[in-house]
Image (cartoon, rainbow, N blue to C red; front, side):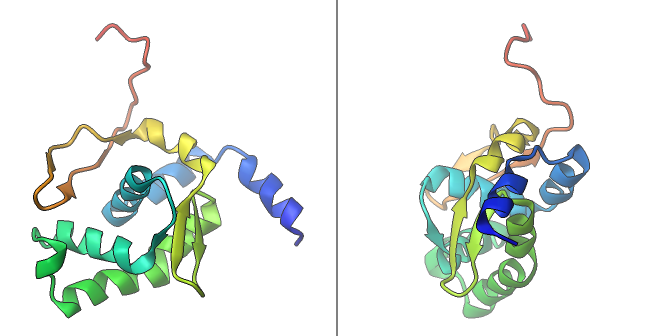
Length: 139
């Protein structure tokens, strides 16, 4: 398949089933949020540390190697390849780099970034919003 075909395929709007399939997992939601905040390519290790710190309610400096490895392996083998297949991220497995794509625009209406944020630990809460409220809503 040519690169041109791949780019054309990724421009298509993903189905709601596909969007919710990606967003039903907290690691994938946290990955999207972290990549949005960084607004640049990040390493798989950096992303794994961030998510591991959230999952273990600690700082990245206090993580154990097994805590890091558990998240790293899950992201590498399962979550990032799935997100790459859908087109919401570009995941270079050989180099260990992850970049958010423009496809994220189709996922954002279903994410709730209003969760509490603890800057001292770098943790956050991201939830899936089942019914996004339109911006024009008076509520």
